[in-house]
Length: 332
Ligand SMILES: O=C(O)C(=O)Cc1ccccc1
Image (cartoon, rainbow, N blue to C red):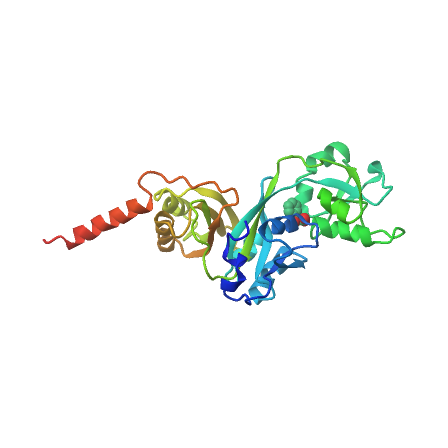
C-alpha cells in the first residue's frame, strides 16, 4: 500500500513538513494488530510511529496536528464496527480516510513462565479480541473472566513489567503470537480464535486535503442522518445509491446520542467521488438528508475492481447530461 494515499508523500501533503518523516499515530503499544496494519501502510524506516493509548487519542492527535496520520481499527469480520472509531470520525473536526489495510488476526493465550493453563481465571485483552475467542473460553476455560485492556499488547506489556511477586490483576493475556514473543511471555494455548479466518480492517486517517486518485477499485465512506423517523426515510436514503447503481459494502447505524431513536448511518459505498454515479448519489443524499459527512474516497485494500452496472458509467452520465442540455437548447 505505500504510495497509494497522499500521506505517503510528505513533500506534497498539506500540513506535513517537507523533509521530515510523516508521523503516524496508532493504537499501541508496539505489538498490537494495529501496528501490524501500520507496517503494511508504511515501514518504520520511512515514518515516525506514535503509539497512543486508544483510538480516540490516535484520531485526536491528527486533529490537533501532533500526528499527520492515524491508523485505527474500524471493523472486524466477527464483531462488526469499532464504535470508538466510527463515532470519532462521525463528529468533531473533519477527518478523512486515505486508505485501508486488512490484517488476519490470530490469537494465543499467554502468561508468565510457569503459568498453568488450568489455573487461568482472569484474562486481559482488548474487548474485540475477547469477543473473538468467546467460544474457545466457554469450551476450555468456562470460569475465565475478561479483564478489559486498552489493547492486546497493552495487556501483554503490563503482565511483562509487573514484578513476579505482584498481581497485575489478571493471570494471562490474549494477544497476537508475535506480541507474546515480543513481551517474553509463554504461550499457554494456540489457535484460540473461534474463527481462524477472522480479518480486521484498519483505516489510514488524515486531515482533509488532496483526495487519493481513483483507481477503479475504491471505496467512499460517509456519515448520513435521516430527515425523520418516518416510514420511507431510510428507503429514500438507500434509493440515492440504488438508482445510480452504487453498491454498499458496509452500512451500520449508531445512535446520534441526543434522543432515543435517532440514528447516524455509517456507510461505505463502492466507487470514488470522482466517478459520476458516486457524485450523483452524494448529490441525492445532500438533497434528501439533513446531514451528510464525506469521509473520503480511497483505494480498497483487496483491490476488488468496482462492478459498474450498465448505464451507470461516467460516459453514460455524460451522454445523458448532453442529451438534457440539447433538449433545453431546442427552439420552441
Ligand atoms: O488490541 C489490539 O492489538 C488492536 O490492534 C485492536 C484489535 C483487537 C482485536 C482485534 C483486532 C484489533
